[in-house]
Every structure is written in C-alpha cells, then in structure tokens.
Amino acid sequence: MHPILGKPKRLALYLLAWVPLTKLLAYLLAAQGGLSSLEITVLIVPLAVLYAFICLSIWYSCRAVPLETISFVGVISPDVLGGKGSPQAAIREATGLLRVVLPNILAALIVSFLWLLAAKGLAAELSTFSKFQGLNQRFEKDLPLVFGVGVLLYLLSVAMHYTILAQEASREAEQRVLQAHVQARDAELRALKAQVNPHFLFNSLHSISALTSSDPARAREMCIALADFLRRTLGLGEKSVISLEEELSLIHSFLAVEKIRFGARLDMREDIEPETLDCMVPPLLLQPLVENAVAHGIANLTEGGWIHLNANYRAADASVAISVENSFDPEAPARRRNGVGLVNVRQRLYTRYGDRASFSVSKNGESFQVGLTLPAERKPVTA
Image 1 (cartoon, rainbow, N blue to C red):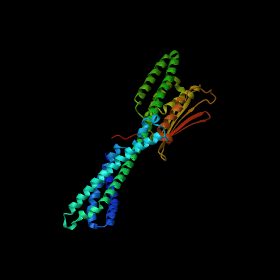
Image 2: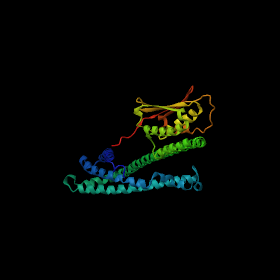
Image 3: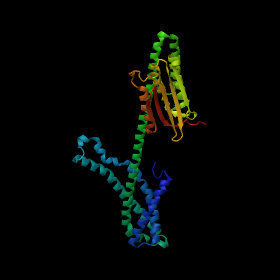
Image 4: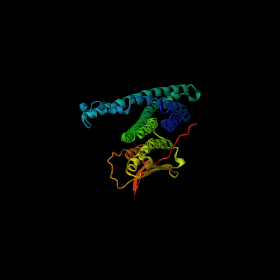
C-alpha cells in the first residue's frame, strides 16, 4: 500500500507541504508579469493540486527501480568485473546510476509536458469567461517556466519517495534483526531447558540402580515418584513461563523422589510470600537449584541437612527475589561434576531477562546460598 495514500494524516501533511510550493510558483508567475493575482490563483491552485496527486504515482516507479540498482551489477560478479576502485567498478557504478537517473529524468520530462498541456487546456477553458478573456494568450509566455518548475517538482518528489523507501527498508531490516534475535534467544532457551530433565533423570536412575540391590521396595517407589515427576514436566516443552506456584509443585514432585532416597535426612523448609505465587518464571528454573542443594549439600552430610527456599516480592522495583539456601560440609572434598545446574540457571536468566535479572552464589560457614532476582511478570487474567 502507498505510504501516503494509505494514511489520511500523511496525505493531509503531504498536501500541506505543497502550499509553499504553490505560493512559490505563483510568485514566479507574478514576477513574469502579464497575469493578475486572480488569474494566477484560479490557474495555479487546481494545477498544483493535480500535480501533487500525479507525483504520488512516483512511489511505484521508485519501487520498480530501487537505489540498490546502482550496485546490482557489482554484486553479480565482482571477481570478473574488477574490485572496488578499478575501472570496471567505476563502469558498474556508472551503469547502475544511469539505470536509476535516466528513467526518472525521462518520466519528469513526460509528466511535466502533460502537466503543461493540462495548464494550456485550463487557460483556454478559463478564457471563455469574459472576466478571463485572453488568458490563454497571456499565459503562453509563462509556459517554459511552468514546464521547468514541473520538472524540478517531479525530481523533488522522486527524492522524497526514495527517502521514504530507504526508511521503510531500514525499519524492515531492524525488524528482521529483532526477529532473528528473538528466534535465536528462544532456541537457546529451549536448548538450555532441554538439559534439565536428562541431567536429573541420569542422577535418579543412578540412585535407583543403587537401591535395587539394597532395598528393592524403595527402588520401586522411587521409580513411581520419578514417573510422576516426568509426567508433570511433559507439558512444559512449549511453555516459556509458568507461575511460581506451578514451579513449586514441580519441586515438591522432585523432592518426593529424593525423600525416598534420603528419608528424614532431607529437611525442606519454605518461606513463600503469597504475592509471588502468581508471578511467572521460566519452567524448571528452581528445580536444578534444589537438586544442586541435595547433591552437593545433603548427600555429603551423614546426619542430613536442610534446604530453605525463600521467595519475596519487592514492590519498589516490581521484582521477585528468590533464594535457595542449604547446609553443607565445607570440609568435604569437592565432587567433580560438569556444573549443569548453576550454569544452566544463570544462562537461562540472562538469555530471557538480560540485565533485568541477577544471579549470585555465596557461602557462609556451613551454609551455601544461591540467590536470584527477576522481574515480577504476573499471570495473565483470563475472563
């Protein structure tokens, strides 16, 4: 659709821009002498309105012969025709320039000639009235001026339409870059999320394998709890965010698996503000943190330990602060692991929220804490 004709406000501004151009043409005709102010007005105003709408058709010719034509030949075979700065390159640029300039100059001459004929016809028609008798004869000497102004106005409109085309091309390029960035971000998020379940599944299967020989009944129970957790996560593949309440439900399902293994040694405490339950978070964001607390903290403590999950709403900056703190043995030797849990959470936070989210890890005596802050995006209300 035409960028000016398609929007009434733009059309009004475009026609308003022709007012000073019409006054300039009237001034030039008045300077030539021979025509009264009334004759100039009744002659120039309709001609200017007609030419303003004729110049709108330039949009289609500019789209047919874009400015990219100037370098089109060079894009085809730069090795054969020569590189930048070579005589061949100069010939290519000159050829492309001519393909843009010549059609527009030719169109300007043709359209201006037709406008000139319209002006002569209007002057002849007005001459039939007694008040404007002889106008067509007096107007004859002004025809070269009208023709020259018509050419200049046409070329000015060409420059305007090429500017509009360049702006549209720039906006489209920005939209493509933004869309590509969003698609890349979504692909990265899906890849990071895909790491979570296999990682947890490997650890669970390893635990089940250890229980099959020592306690088959608990191994069976753990298989059932694991199946329930995996069933809950099946519907998360296409979801980019879920409510914190749903995420906590997934954590409870996960802990049901681990409690079979650790029993009373695993003590989970929660301090969740009600205002945070409907806030949206990426799915399986907190589960790796709780799993990390179990694997690196509780598993190394003979008497067991505790995990404290805390979520607070910060009204000052409309954010949610979440922390996962657990007891651990600072003297226990470090276990060689690939660190999927913490790295995954950090990358997912940055990929989705950028600088709007934060991630921190700290140790204090026999306590290990992971804290994260993210924007408080609320669950949409459905009617």
